Length: 309
Image (cartoon, helix red, strand yellow):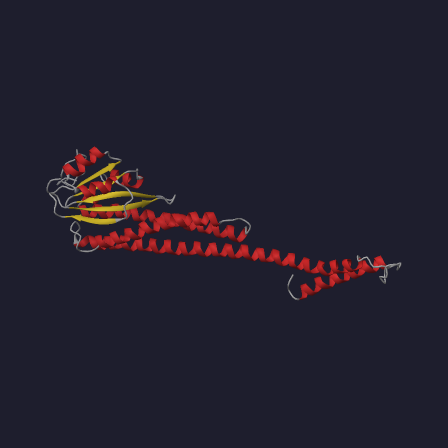
């Protein structure tokens, strides 16, 4: 934005007094980073290195002893597929540089809308707040997605005890662990931005960054609650599978207990002794069957009365 309050696109250069610049680089080459970010804006070589090598944790670094003092921020965007995308922000007195190695639709849309809403670029602090606020607002849709998945898993656990959901729960917990970690570190970064010691925001900006801090704190607390629910859900399914196994073992034990005396009776009458009392009795076979049925029914009724079956 120039001194007249209008927004226009110009070739990359250091903004003059009264101007505020936003430079957005998507998938830049190493030569572009060196030429624009380092040579034109005078960013520290360590900041260039962090931009090139992904895998940084959210952080805030200051480079005060430079030709153009600036701050470097690493932050993460999270989508509904639970994928965390790292991007970098360089903040100077009157400029903001955003660098992404992967396209971020919400950031591209915000960059395009600055021409329609010049107030976004009134100063570097306002622009930085708008970028981080949009990013954190996206975290709520991620939390909604996690809650929907949690509800679906809970229904499956209660209505289909035979289905093994442990692998699905473990995969979801691994994803949740990563996004919870980056959001927690991101909360620390925003907390430092809300402090009055940050040199590129004004005192009036603190309340806005505190609002973002409150939002991301709610997100982190929500992730913690979902993580605890997933752990409880995993324990519940394990307990349900154990209870089902116990029911199966109890049923098998009852049937074994019923047939054990029957096997004993048959074994007695199957011995090879000539003088068995009922051996030559006309009703001996019927007697044997009546005896076994009586014993089996009696044991079944006994187990039922005791609540074992």
